[in-house]
Figure 1 (cartoon, helix red, strand yellow):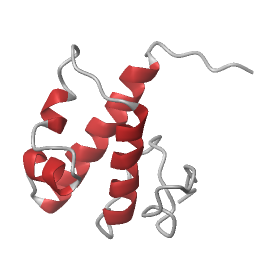
Figure 2: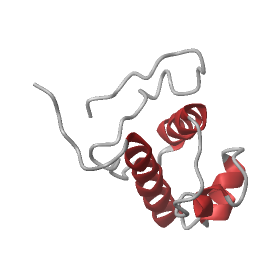
Figure 3: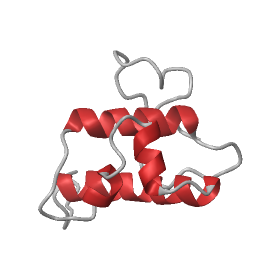
Figure 4: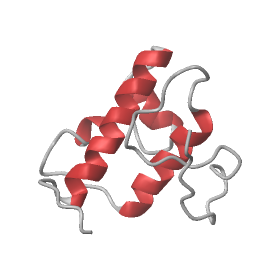
Length: 102
């Protein structure tokens, strides 16, 4: 059965990254700029996400989700509905997305 959505794929992926970055920043008291630097995406990456005229590619999304999966703070709930790598495969770039079922 098809799943219908009101969002474009780009909007859905952007929302995932915003939810992850906001939750991580709140849990760790890190700024979004610092978080972007840690991830190697640049200090302004997460600010750009909120600009509808800016975008990113799937590799960048994958890199960010992989980083969040590996570095997620213990005891902090992962945002529901956002795919996550299993911790043991998160740091291996050639591993396909393996969604955890926590």
